[in-house]
Image (cartoon, rainbow, N blue to C red; front, side):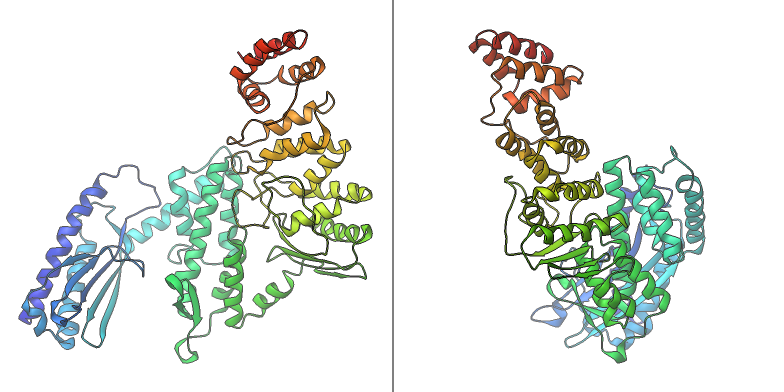
Length: 554
């Protein structure tokens, strides 16, 4: 071997061994492995980066995992004068083959922990010359490990995914299962194969909110990873800030997408839409650039399952279930127009239209409900406008019953503290307007996700301003404070100063768990200590009633 090439190889190989020794010690300490993880290391890049002023004053860069385009956490090493003797021919004919041979031998050896290497490994070599870049990549596959993982995956599906509850996989397996599903070495990449497995595990985890959210995140990221790393890179170049955008490659540099791959890409666009609607729209637009008529239909008309358009002299309405969007234009600001709009939306929901849709409203009237934390969105405006007409209350109530769903969110705002459960604006509008809908209000508060929604913290304030505090509405008031988030503060300017009101409150608290009683007392009185202070200040008979109330929480 050429002496310069040999010196370069020895320098590089010594560096790799030093890094791998440390990495192996770390990996060796991991005890709780998932059965779906055969190994960790699947990438190595060796690169020569030229010096800024002098080409030969560069450094050897070694990356043991695929780096992000905007970061540099390479291991860096000095090189000897041999670097100036290297040529492209020497590197490609002597250095690269020798490096590949050593790496492949190490990859198949038992020198490191059994989980050190994954079943597939990519070796990348890059060399910066003064005016050009020399690149080479090589892939190794350990078929024994791949087959072992395939068998483990098949057995995992049969023993942990398909059986009925209470059988569930371990939480540590969720991430790896999601990524196995989108690995063409392990699974056929078709919607009819992958989707049932994703949905099956989603159903099994539905009762555990945190675990369910985690699985949805893992599966969404895995599907998105397939789209970014296995599909789009074939037809587009990364562009824009942080290379997050895509530009179509010149026609001579790209192939026609295979039908089955394009179909799976469209499935992914729809599947991740609930969590990332902007990504869904971007993926569909990219598919249109690749000539997909189906994607164009999705963007323009939706899936075709729903009536997507309605026009009259009162309103113009359209809906797209794929984009989960409804557009309403109120042509004539009157009760009949909002009635027709409610009929259109309710009809869609009865047919299974996504409840977490976003609504674009064009209306000359801009009314909003008296709750500070609510987003001033088109959905909010629509139901505030519609609730001006009492004759429409039954239709608004029907909408609320159709829309309410635990652990679901409207798409009217970016995920934030202003995100609310479907049906929120309708329920609040009715609850503030008429005591006929107090039962609906209470049912909503029983469903609302108190850990991930906080807009309802101010509902009680608006309710008291609308209805006051009475014996009749005490059950509603209690449900409102119980449905608040952990960050909710005590209510201000609330007055419970009559014996019958305290009796009503005691009646509501009597059958509750202690922690629920404490929540109610905190929101209504500021806590046990302040309630005790109120007992000392008041005179009978209200003093005696408050003392009875205090006894429930001490």
